[in-house]
Length: 497
Ligand code: SF4
Image 1 (tube, rainbow, N blue to C red):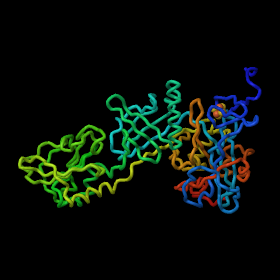
Image 2 (cartoon, protein in one colour; image 1 turned 45 degrees about the horizontal axis):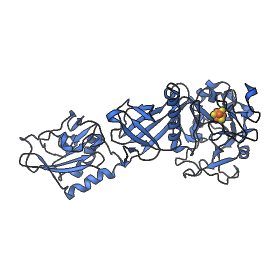
Image 3 (cartoon, rainbow, N blue to C red; image 1 turned 180 degrees about the vertical axis):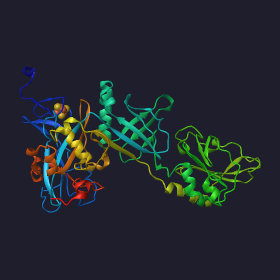
């Protein structure tokens, strides 16, 4: 086999693909290259400059700054795994194991770009609009890459990626899934199709940006469900309307029947809502889900009303119908036949309706990377990988991703979840196996590292990293400091050194 390989090519062993790379060329993932016969990592090591010092956003363009590596001036740096390289094929220690003294404690950070075959993203889309039924398939370029999960309060949720799509389907499915995950994690826009046939919806997802649903950018996240909206704004409507209906796909509220209306002595109006009555003034399933009023499929709100009760209703009854974001509204008065007739909205109801919209937050897409730290990653930290897992569970080791705070799931293994907007730009890469490459750092006391069987001979000082060629970024808006003693159990019950 080797005879066929041109002599100028070198072999990259940073992932199972094992590319042969010619001089001046890069490998299949564009992360490693052959420079004059030497294998080099193309992206610079990323260091967060001045953790616990400043609360300013990451540099947008990711250009290297002129930090000179000086760690003596109180501007404590943190070496992230972005640009660090991997531990493949597993027996190698992590590429950077760096020590520094933090508030009198000798700390060490083990830094690796993990190859995550088991990973995906959870997407939260702030919208009332129906984007798909629970369990509907999410498509990109005709390939299934995930599905719709349980809706949350005011938001739709998607689960994308995962090992079944990356490795369990066709080669194309794996490639398309990996590419979509990579772009989402690196904060790029990805258009997905949800469902199929007559209920196919297109959504453009981009971390930190409003979703674009069927070509229309979403503006607002609802202030609450229809019932909650009734409760919140009942007083504003009092005296200006005889009844108010807040149209919502999940829980439509009716002021005159709702407990809020009762407590404010709003009299019955004889109104009849279609749909399933849950409790007084709260109705389920008044219409089908859709992209109309309050996430229903209706454009005419009167479609959800039955005839008014003639024994209770009266001519001239004032009725406001409004959606949960206040973006859609209509005003009616009953005629002599007790039929609602549309009229211009009275001035006294304009402000209360605007108040609903004012109380809505901007609609946005949140993208959370989720992955499991596998054997290779953990072996890069210690020869006894299970000890690392235990150390994380015992809060002796703190896990961060690109310096950002990560949530470590309970139970076995080290399964982390992190908001991609908290991480430096360009944190993610891929390998064509296919799998995502994501930064992960483990920080702990040097003494604890020794106890768990760490690669002690590989520890180097943080000052030595300045020779590597690096980019420096500022801490993210949350200013998470992986080295803060608050992250560690020992800070709570002992004085340390
Ligand atoms: S795809 Fe894998 S083997 Fe090829 S250059 Fe990238 S890390 Fe190296």
